[in-house]
Length: 209
Image 1 (cartoon, rainbow, N blue to C red):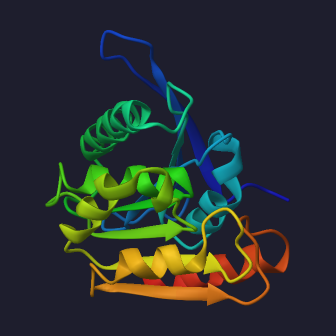
Image 2 (cartoon, rainbow, N blue to C red):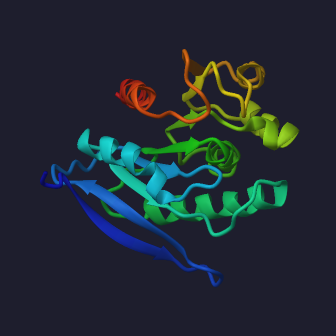
């Protein structure tokens, strides 16, 4: 099948280890299209976000996938990865085809938490956020406080059979933030595979329209 988008590799050099990633752009380019930055979760790389990125690009969005420079999930790693994501946002904003204030953050499990805490540093630069089974319990009050300060539309996706992050933990976090929509997939575990991934993609599409 012929590709429906272009792919361009990029590197961000801030004097430390480079952040590497790829820009995906549909052939049917629109200057006002939203650009979605995909944040991988624990034990994941940019390749794990590719199915979501490819779908987004096929629907006319620009996609950005990248790899965090460090592994881990403690608070020091959270702060380091928050800097990485902020650097990616700053880089993307400078692209001539990216509309101002038209950037969406989409993160999976720990990557979702990083998205939440990053938004607080750049509140006027992100239009929407999608959080897939966010691992709030790994960061305790730090992530909850960040969520409480967030004022943009948020879509949260989670399975009711998630044994890594209990659904009740997510519901508790969202009590702090009335502008969030929670979609629960019956029978889904912590990862969205097969039909659950298709449901997640469809739900994300509807949220971004």
